[in-house]
Length: 365
Image (cartoon, rainbow, N blue to C red; front, top):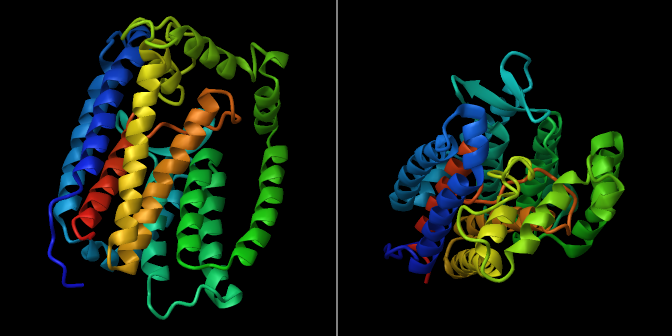
């Protein structure tokens, strides 16, 4: 590929920075009450978010200017490190339990979430592996089964934490890469039916997951238990109306919506900024997905094309699930909203992934 680099896609960069700016403002607004109550500092969450945003932006601009083909050389090593971290987090004394899941490796007052690293690591490796000219994914046994086994192994380790939300996002983005690489529809359809049965089994295996399903179908059946989050989220969105109550004026962030700065930050955003604010965020995500898919379709490199598809797929799946949960269309899964929700590992890794996507846009037609 001899095409020289151009400037990164302006609309892609603008949508990323716009979402990041909105996210920082909303992390302060949504989390200030909880931060003051728990830490005596209403700026606690936003200061940490700004720190990780700075680290993420440095990583993004570094990856944006590094030849992305260098990343391909280290795809195997990155994946091995990600698997090692997933195993390490399961060791008692090393992995830290938060929210009922052993998903974190604590470093002083900070922590990293290995499953977040695995999302990007899996996307990188699958793009490298399936992007080889001699790879024949149309063969089930030798083509499709090996990457599925690899994805299943990573998903299994994530489920041991357990973290169904992150595992679902990783699998969704990975399957999109597999589909784009040319897997046969009949093979994927057969596996999808098996996957649905497995998903049902995972739900039935854990009582709290079944409670979330029943709460999703009828949250008022248990308004103070499993249905509490959905009900409080809807109580936040409803009064927002067209223009919202005003920035910082949310009532539901006063210990009604649990962890308002993370999974349910969109409900606080809709309460304060209304339908207009919510649609602005969705519009920015649509621009991001549109420009990202345009990169995937116009770059003259199979690895780069699959990598763009995977990164865009990771974002799209996460946005659909998070907002679906917040507005009551999906069961509660514990997935954050990219660039908007509070979270160090998630934000830093997402900005790093966007740096790669912006790099790819510099080679697109």
